[in-house]
Image 1 (cartoon, rainbow, N blue to C red):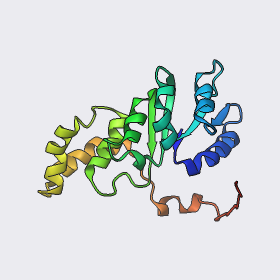
Image 2: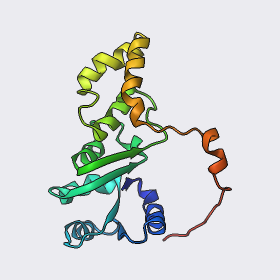
Image 3: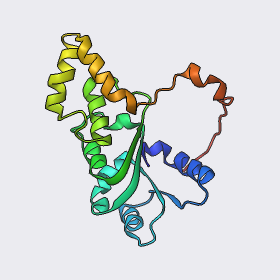
Image 4: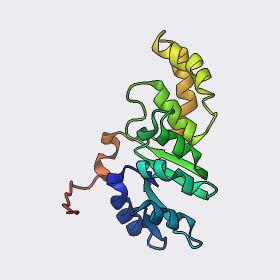
Length: 180
């Protein structure tokens, strides 16, 4: 699981709650300690790492094979040219998932970057994506290009609106946890 550093301990708590049979570790501590966790023979089942740590420690993951990688707050890789996006995309994983509440904030290239992580090449190279979709949609308001892009991405997007899940949501609970 790759997430913002502020969510690492929350992911650890939730993983232990819902998957008690799996060994889950939040990648905290020094760079040497984190590298040792990745390289140990009996590695944990689930590693929870922040985007910043992954970017800094990417060499420690080189040559490692993972079954799954899940991005929480995937908008962190919206800039495909950023070191963080490149690091996440360099992880060798069989299955890839991305969760975000804001897949597009400013540009269609943000959607392209997330899909480039999920299924490299599915939305073409960025240059071809820009020619086929981004420019026609943004500059020309091309409804056919918009429909074609929607047809390509819709099967892979689960979008739940608040009103659709309102009855499933628990009452708001606030927990204050103090940290050094």
